[in-house]
Length: 379
Image (cartoon, rainbow, N blue to C red; front, side):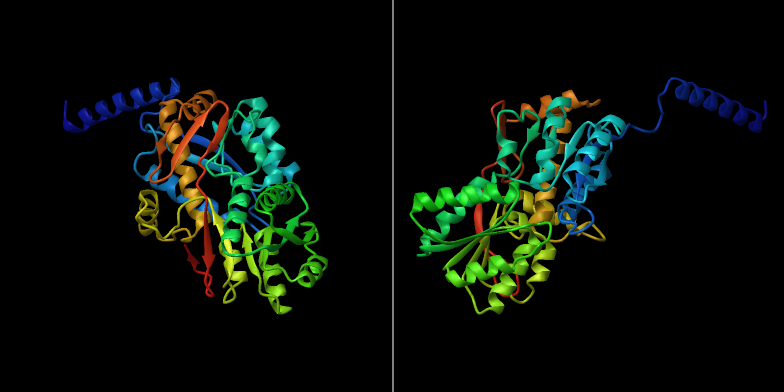
């Protein structure tokens, strides 16, 4: 037999083995993707874009190093425009048609609350939702695995902090929806406990974003501080228009405003705005997970922004990856849920996560930060 004949023989054998592998449903050089589902607002205000950028950075970094248990992670993201009905339909598609093994990083209280019954009914894990809604912390949400502290905890800490600043007269601005009313309840609980005086209580509708009535009411009351429960766009607009009216109280809001759009909208006029935070400062490289975030960013041609929203997405992705590792080589929704449920005192790098059957809080980390004039966050 000459050399070409011998080569042909080897090729024929290789082809036969490859064909046999295909017929058996096994690819000789490709592991299965682990499918993760996400429904978030990608149009309109696109409030989830920084969270998603941070999470994608971590998932891509893990995939570049072989994935999880030899499997690559693939996130299927659908735009829900922050519409609860669309979020519900997206979730059905992700579970029933796309066959995801977990849901991840949903953002906005109304949309997350809308999908909770389906999450519970389908026994599908929802990991690291970007909302502190109390509904996610009840005993009826066995399949929700929170990363962040609740909004009520954030609101309470805010009232604690303004009290130490000698502030006694406050106003409250809230968005008239489940998100805003929940924070309002948290503010009012803290105000009552600390015996502060509420000089104005004003709301607005997210549907029309008309703030004139609230601005007039709060400006007339001349509060020392305004506690705000609003979207990034509404919060920024309110602060700018209050200052245009010559009002300069201490403005305080919660972590949902953490986005580059918020800082850009207030560009050059951020001084005196305080924000509660549920993850460490993104510039504090003394915290191991923040150092890891910086390391991953440096390896990327187009890194996510260096802000709290991107860092929260990054840490949430890390939490999910830890759950996938524990779920084994062939993760299923049931295996992922069981793996996450078993997490106790998991150190993600300076942020410790624990779950129990009756406690899905994850972390209770909260700190208050202040923006300087140029919108740089100071601890």
